[in-house]
Length: 402
Image 1: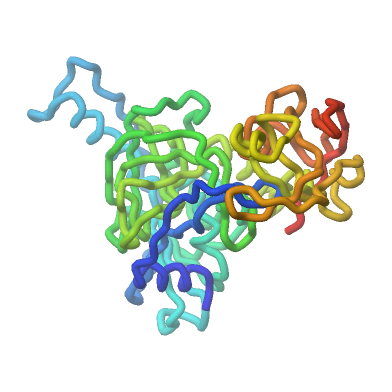
Image 2 (image 1 turned 180 degrees about the vertical axis):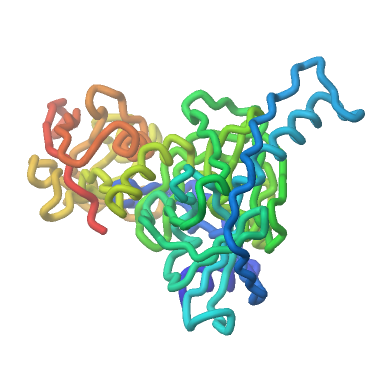
């Protein structure tokens, strides 16, 4: 049973998915949270037609209406939404994945979403959509359906690239935006294929920025996720999250729900992760994540007070993993058992208070900094507190074990 099937069974069982607020020991690049829910959906076997690819004339991008504009009785906001959908929906594809057997007789079948990145035929989607696939079908808004080939995938960002061989004129690439400039309260539009309903538009707001969610199967985390209340359901996975200008700001990837369907808490991989990871997937088939090599947990003021720690904020190093960059640099893990709020903790390890001069308030700060600002082989400086004294330690970041 592949991962998508297991997640769908969990959905059908009505499992509760919610972010944990507890503090637990975590791997490098990991934060305590609930397991993510994939948003691919099972589908009945389709009847597949293979029309000969043709190259219709590319439609020019229509300008967005001005504040005073209206069209056919639509108000300004409706005009914006109609315009965005008309321009972007032809870029969204319907992905059918067969994970066992051959042809449409297979029982291991699921569907998801993706979008056209360029005229070379590269399609961006989620890793969990294509994970374990031995056959992929990509259907465009013109009903053209072709075989897809996985070019590269990265489970730790849940991104993947699928290539299709079609004339460049049949492809309508999206425009990538900038997730660094996003604000809570901005409009967020999702286009995807929930429950197999192709190219469905849902609209909401950006509810929060910078969510860090643990991946249950790898133990690492997805950093800097965008949270939105735009309806996201099984089958939306891999589709674009857009701003009101029609620019891609993220890739829809997770939902948190009591019922397994939309509850107003959807999450998307930010577009800046696409810009960083996808070119490497196209070039090398994989992405090398920088690796510090520790387990640790966030220190709170209450924790510092109750356990008499020498710092009120930072990351307590529980373990420096054997053979990792931290061990090689002399970082020390915990050795003394203690109890905090009824749970066991290991004390005596170094406390990380800054990385490359930037203050560390929580382990999420370390995760996000490593993901956004560093590369494998880069020299990084940690500010630590050891035996009550502050000191600086330099280390060379390794590559995260796969």
